[in-house]
Length: 292
Length: 320
Image (cartoon, rainbow over all chains, first blue to last red; front, side, top):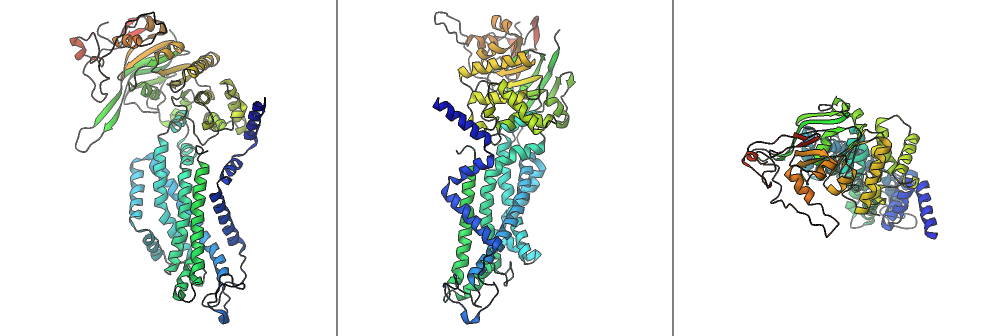
């Protein structure tokens, strides 16, 4: 009798549980991923609410290059500006640039990958050979090249990150599409008479999502590094903008006397990238229904 | 004369096997001139070894593969050259149940979405109506409402095959192509699923094309049986006729291989020599001439055509 009620209870659970709740329950069991998730959430909140104790461009020449203290948690830079405030502001810049750039790249790359993998033939050849050309450039060089063509500035960094991401997403989605297309449930849907569009987006695309999510989060990490590198090299944000990469760039002149100028922006980049990567792993485990 | 639902006329299909640079292209000859009819309301079973073209034949009917030669007629329509757009209304009348109940259900969709998908494609019902219909169908195949929101991996093989059957039934098809629907299941479950097939046939006046390699399964469900060998239909007749009086040597060998659950009963077993020839290089003449025990000179020269040996009993053999 007891067993029976338990089964019944379980069925009722299924009845009232939305898929989102089901998935989040599964996700929250993974500790590392949960911590990363809340860290990313924390960064997003920082980015939105901007709890900066000082104005980011307020200079204080009596207090330049000072070490971290109760007054200036992360110390001050060569103009006496508060590094903590600038890093908080930089969070907004980095996250916006990375998320917008990678999302645009992922959307375009996924569509191209689905087309190449599903229709094969000439469209596949054109898409994949173009990707090969783009991938032939060493990573950062492509981004620098794009920025060099369209000019520096944050929006152009976003465009560079998007273009830089497209071939990777196209490849990943194409290879998943090739595998999923051969699965029996896709054939079953074809035999039902499902349209190509529905087949691609309802049956094939969801199967590529785990690969896409892992790749997306890793790419967010890479994009943050790319954006920082471009700023470091002077191609990205204008130096007055407190981008993490730009902060590293100005800090490197003072590495001997004020290492905190490099340490905190570097730490911000490191933790953010790590957070995105761990979050991606956790999401992958959660979204695969077979890994229960 | 009974009404014909499906008719295949001399259907051929070959697949590209290898394409090497500067070399002749090689083709696997999957179906070589197969012709048969399926009558309304009957169960036609197609039996044969692996790779004899059974599944390809099934997929030629619902145009999951495009045939190279011949004609496919369904419900008095020649659908041979239908585009996928023109096929859409036809597809609602023929549904398929697949061999592998693990692979044929999308693991990322809930059961109610899987079962109601044909309704989404072929009707204008609202979501609520579709789910209602999915619920009714699940009850018909012996599952319950609580299963609607689950995913396929939460079910056993037999349950999944029931879900596959429910999906095939949603749009009230005339024909169900069942491609080895029970061969992935345990024997005890096989019987349940076959009985379900029979009940549904009575209730919904379905026509089945039942593809199988298992003659003991086929005996329970079919009205007529077609035997395929190397992409040729070698014999087709009513079930009783085939089990009582098989005419083609291959059919005789197949039937002699069915085990009998009676150790006292001795039966002469025909052992075939050798393997199935490679479907890339078919034997000249009769496809069975490499293994036949009655082979004659003629068999190496001329391909035997399917001929009526008795009323409704067609055989492709020179010796008949």
